[in-house]
Image (cartoon, rainbow, N blue to C red; front, side, top):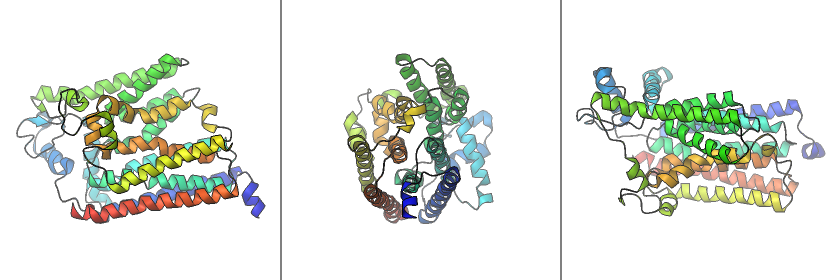
Length: 412
């Protein structure tokens, strides 16, 4: 039995069992943490969507509000609107708001599990895809499941959706992952890429513009992929048009935009409010990270580095499954592009909103840890060590969330 567990490659039936186990891990983690979020956090301040924006929609005609976003109670009265959110996203959130009582929810924040659920589905799809190309035994599967649990319990996500703005970026992490997966294939699946990118076009067009721009830039200087290039250009143009719709609407209704200017976000206006330089914006943002988050971020980077060094210097890398059918630059570069380009061009935004962007910074690291375990040549010693490391990281994530609930959520 011991030799079986150690040496036997996982057959199709057992692979199916572990994929089902991954779905169960995802369900339990998301259910438990969404329950903690609803019951341990009481947001006492007004919510900008359900307490300010949507009442305006209900009390005034669309010809007056244009289905735009209003940040303060006096914004509509002062003929001001925030144009950073598309009407598509706001209408979707309005539909959720109207349906919350049917699910026994009391706030739009109670739907925050949707973003993590979509990210879990995308991560499991990646595991299912690459597991067919890897020689996986039970030890590897257990580490893969633990790495998935680490992603799903990330305090970078749960603290963001619970203690800060209800925002569109968190809903799109899973679609971003799928977009990079389909675009990075050596024979790109352009239709699936377009479908995976469509939500960002309508919900967060800046993400669509940045990600497609990265793909276009890489394709211009590497092996040409005409179909992917056409798809990326299509997403870029649609994203740019979607980005302009709220601004055109506000102008047509005579509403002044309260969105931050590009000069302000870039620091080129000379302002030092919340931003001094590029390094400060990333390492020491104006809106300081919690100590628990910073500790976990350092540990995640160290774990990923140790993994890769051991795989390279210890001759522990398998068949490099990601590079068999996918382009690593397009995959990991695409996952990193939104944070990297935002930090380069609009560092003030990174400094002021680390809670919205840190998950996009560390998503490639979480995914890299999962894929590395699929490609790892494990022995008994390494399995024990990595099992202990993953258990410690998961516990660190969970305690970070609960400590934040105790120290911040209860006082908010």
